Image (cartoon, rainbow, N blue to C red; front, side, top):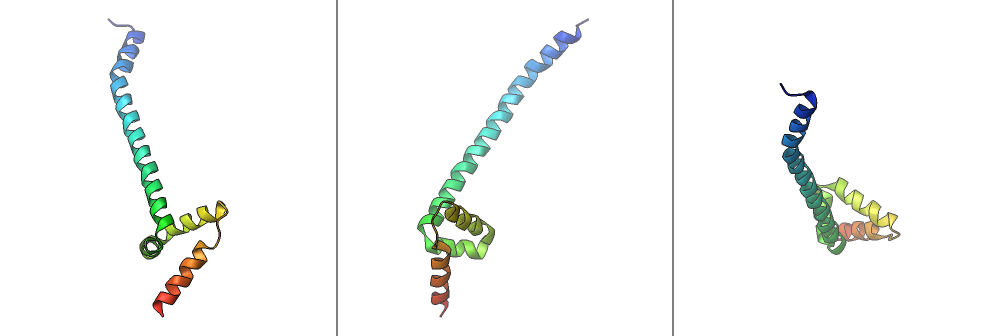
Length: 90
């Protein structure tokens, strides 16, 4: 008969590969999220047309972009966008 300590040790060994897979999966998901956010921010930061598309499809994401830009000390981007979009309708 096995002792409880050896049973726990054996269970820990069998869970170790599962824990590694979970850790790798979480790490990959975080890296994809970080790079995705970076490229989305870069695209919004360089393209006013893309920001207009975002304002129609995902206005909450554009609002986060504007707030982060304003928090960093850059003001006026939102106003420039709204002015251009208003003038392009007329």
